Length: 82
Image 1 (cartoon, rainbow, N blue to C red):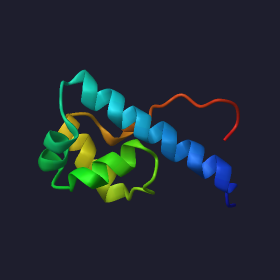
Image 2: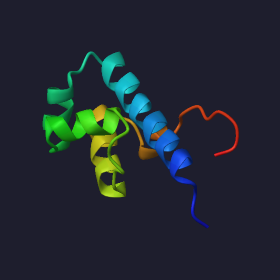
Image 3: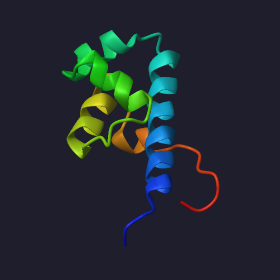
Image 4: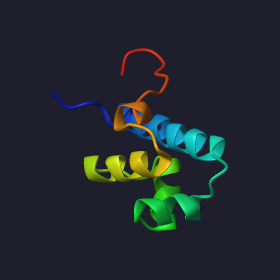
């Protein structure tokens, strides 16, 4: 069952905010996170802005770089039913 495009955008935005919050709580720049994850800084910026529909592999790379589990990255607040 497919979600509506608006709901997809909300999920991407919430995920990006979660990545940004965890990154900032560690005093880490986007560039440092990207380097640790083996990704481009502009990609991390796109993820944090909710512009990228990130793959499972890249979720794991970012989680490892932040020293959290992939499940921890997916722990974001949802408003209502998504």
